[in-house]
Length: 558
Image 1 (tube, rainbow, N blue to C red):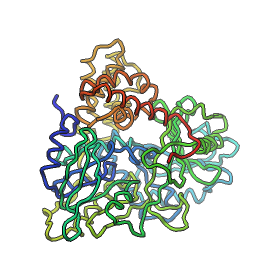
Image 2 (cartoon, helix red, strand yellow):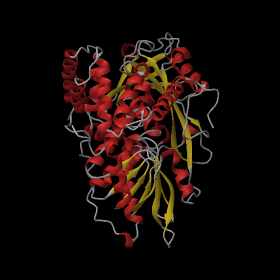
Image 3 (cartoon, one colour):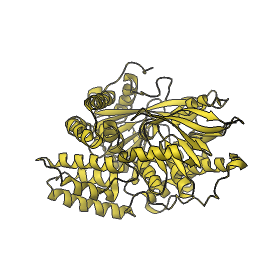
Image 4 (spheres, one colour):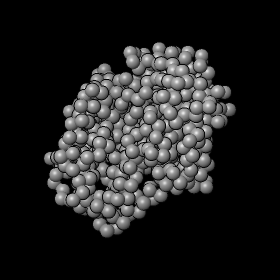
């Protein structure tokens, strides 16, 4: 099978297009927001390019709680429109990729003296269902103490007085971003990672005329020309605006969120839980495959944007939260298997704490024509893309006429082909994979779940390719086939791309990273012609990522 348009093997032709063509829209930033804008704009008839200075989804879009959720807690701040939009978007994104965005019942335990009482919870969840247009069995259900403890026996029997059960959706944020970018590339967008926008060039009217860019693979410098420019740089939005000299009173307020990962047997929750912590905040505990992860913290941040880590204080905070709610687990820092730490690029508001800041998105338009999308949530990526394109239409000059935009189509564009069209189809396909993998000597049902939830029916290609590798260990053949697929179809350009953003193994199966790093490094070298220096560099970077995921620093890194 030949490499797709979204392959590192086509990098030279991708750069040639960036250099030689004039685009209708150039997007800076390859997270979920940039991805959403690229897909919407390309599907509506614009010639689009996107550049990302690191890997796609390497910032905030790989560090969320990994939920496509309605934002129940935003009701507390009376952000009604945000809850309504998030609620309606959940169902749409689920329909676009039901293998990747899966229904997840969430249990909200009620405890004596907790944040939410029975009456307020019942009312809040009812309003939530109404705003989010929740239907049928997904509607909230109030539980008494016995029913709540049956749903989750680990809860503290002394303090639980009941609970509420409501609907959410779980996802893999990085894989969702990748699938959106792949789809945009398939229909015509020119997309590249490890290519940084270093500075702007301006015309005689002080409008942006082009971007100066640096390709980190070849160290080459080139210029990208477009009629319109959108920055979707997440936590780096203000840095990009500074390069444009367009910082004004509106600015970002960065907060950090940390999640801890435990082996499932250490925290064997039967289902996802959204629970009170001693300081009045709420935290998620979510089972996923071999592990259960817990998060998140919400603290002001002023450290390095490019190297965000978990501190001992972050770990202690979440451990205290877990041990307060689940009295019998007695978890310590030694029980943590992995962690991830990321930044939320929120809009600054005076005299508001980190947890009080709104998660709404906002658009900043500079006199140079740069349109910056700031704030927002993973769940709202489609609506953010729509609003960004509305801003493009509103602000572009008559001398830079765009083609007439078609109506947005992203509500119906399946992200993965061939598509799985429903939860029932996903479950049937997972069972099918289980039988196929068993015939290859892989009997652990985790892998049929992992492959189907990560790749959908693209898993067929990976399994078929695994037969080409020779090893007494079928799991080694499988992971090498995953790499082959990622090189040819998912723009993998580094070991971190593979083990973190494409497969999630650093967080959800960290032992496999340590076990297969050398063989994957060797395969990468063969596919991508890495020399000894590049191999050493890649292995060092991956080892640092493993270190960050398993270390709790005394302070933030500057």
